[in-house]
Image 1: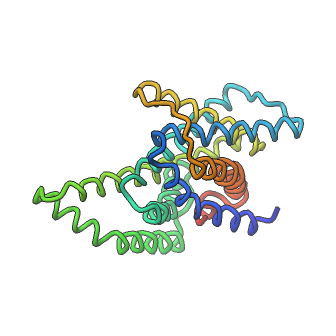
Image 2: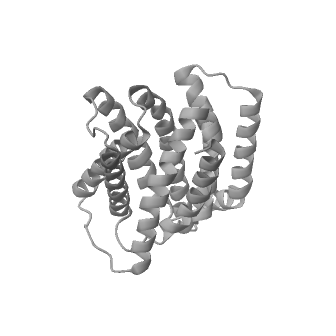
Image 3: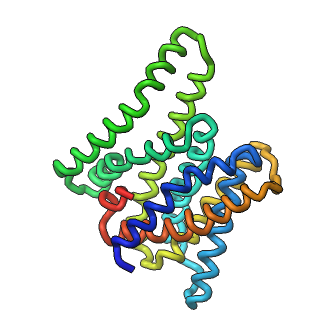
Length: 256
């Protein structure tokens, strides 16, 4: 499939997943929803690999990179994203992810020695200005309220903002780790399946340690959104995105 189609596909799907996540909230703990989502996505990808006749096991050296990748891209990033949407409007969380336009090139400069061109700096400046203008009123009101101890709601806004920012940093780390993973294996379906599995196990461990309840929701909207997030938002969008990173490099793929 052409890179342009993959780019449009990932952009359209991920743009809508932030709204779909809001349909998950209030039924079970956010971390439990993350486990359900990526467990389904991982099993689907393994099934695809089995159907293709791929050997499912990967060497331990590769698995080490996949554990790191899964912990950033599918565990920390998404737990923070789901939690942040309890305090922020989903559209604002989505817009915050434009910061990857500058986080990712800076990471590539630090870890891989890639050049930071004037185009990258301009794109980063535009993304930072856009996010700042969009959040400025809320940030100013929250800071005033905090310093005067007048409204706890503004404190929740800042907490949600901090969680969303952590999610963007974790996603950036995940993007950088894709480069190392691809050096170990070119099978995008299989490496994504393993990374999602490791991320799922890590979040499941977090749920168990913190004593959160494993509940099965009865709401139709929850299950419809879960299917969409697992199959479209995870299986299709992530494989398309990781192929783009392989073809274009992370600094361009993050424009998704």
